[in-house]
Image 1 (cartoon, rainbow, N blue to C red):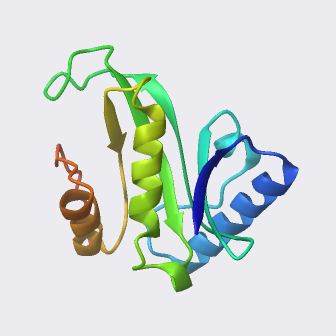
Image 2: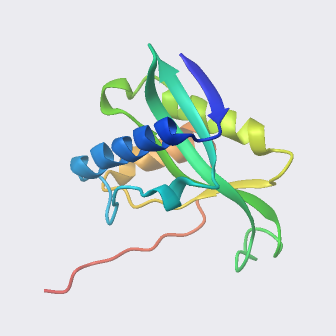
Length: 148
């Protein structure tokens, strides 16, 4: 398996859009929709590949923190992980962790923090992955309940 950062060309964009369509079909996240070109363009993109196929991807962007004073000073440079996806048949093999760690190393001269938001329906597995395996810290939660 290999992991590298790419500048997206038409082929990479098409593959990432197709993978996001697969992700949508699984219905594992609240409100997730397939990506469009504009969702991906201008982002830092990291790919995990195996046997000539994309096994997973991570993309995001560097930004200056706003309204996050409880955890960092205003204007702190951060890398926001906008998406981290591993194809279902390749999961539980460390690919997501390797993607995250590769991206973390790649952006560490530009950003002081890695941040992300998520809307996974499998929150227990998600918390285990991000908190236990990647040593992220829990900052906040937004919960919901449909009123019937």
